[in-house]
Image (cartoon, rainbow, N blue to C red):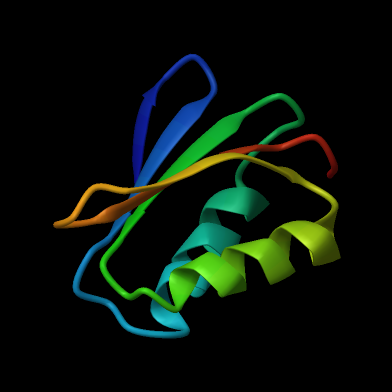
Length: 81
């Protein structure tokens, strides 16, 4: 996990399989504040439905999920703490 400045955190979970990326996201979420943005990088395709479930459960916003071939990049905005 890496703070990239002004309320933005990069979570690099490439190479980690389920539930690793969501666990990493949850750790970043615990350190976040309302309005922060978390960018998650993952290679496990199962992260897409897991992100949908996590966002629904925590009532936070998925800004985008982009499959870039070598990685999936998800951007989440923290709207609920």
